[in-house]
Image 1 (cartoon, rainbow, N blue to C red):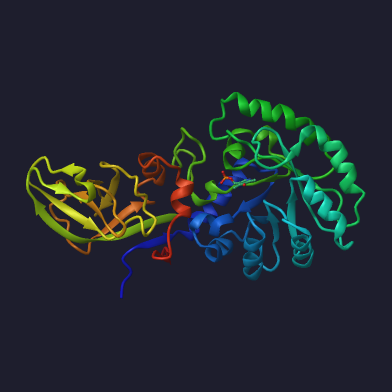
Image 2 (image 1 turned 90 degrees about the vertical axis):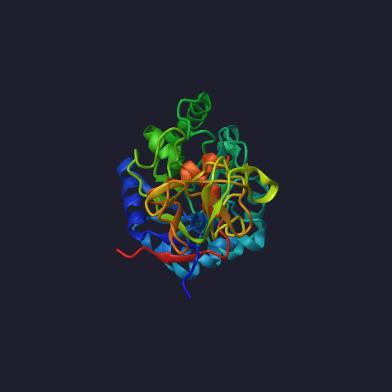
Length: 359
Ligand SMILES: *Cc1c(COP(=O)(O)O)cnc(C)c1O
């Protein structure tokens, strides 16, 4: 049985994109962010392809435990840190590096055994999600440095809210707040996600934390992946499962939201929101069939979507269709569907088969 819907992962592109990170941040170590199943690309495949990274970051303790099974040696940072003292003990046992972002986590550190744990200290400089106030830096550091359960020195980190739009004032405010701490922190530092790694070399610090650019997706709002010399890692394909002739005035799909303007061929593709294709993709969203662009007509349904085949006289059931990836930037699909490429790659479901690109 051949799979209908396939996410093909280009392992060589992952290596290329990691080299692009090092090109942008030649003096920093790379903490490759592989949360959410490596942004939906498949953790085991991505870990192996990124063997040249300096460390990995995940969102949660559960993700760290999964990652430790396939990466016994690399450092693993947990961006959400530990929820309670039991989590901290698990971090000690497995050599995980939790981020300390809240006072309750500092209290928890008092209660665990003395085995020193390497921790990251997160300061909120304007994202206002996780992190302690910049004004609390000195007191907090003093408190933590007096604890037997932490390795000295801590790694100091913060996170940008608007780095994908480098000209926004908010970036300047965050840099102005964090730069003095970066300069006087006695220990390693980290500030930059993918967008900031490209946009703000003056604050790279010791560790950059790229996620999305490793997967070949542009982190910048107004620059394409190709312009940044990033190569898409995931190409999502499915197949035409039916082709038919519709008449002028015929409605297509749920809600009858599209009418044929003339007699025309319609193609049915075997992918829908049940596979993770966005239901909000409107009429006109592109797909590529046999190397040529076509566009969606009518609503995306759970298992299928319908396309205009007027410019595809030779398209036949069984033909391969590219939904995004090589030759069709995922950023374009995300924009059409009113979301970001991050969400599209994370949302693929268990129906999709993963394969490696044969080179
Ligand atoms: C997810 C995440 C990153 C990576 O962000 P990208 O935009 O994918 O590069 C970096 N740092 C933190 C704290 C994150 O949560």
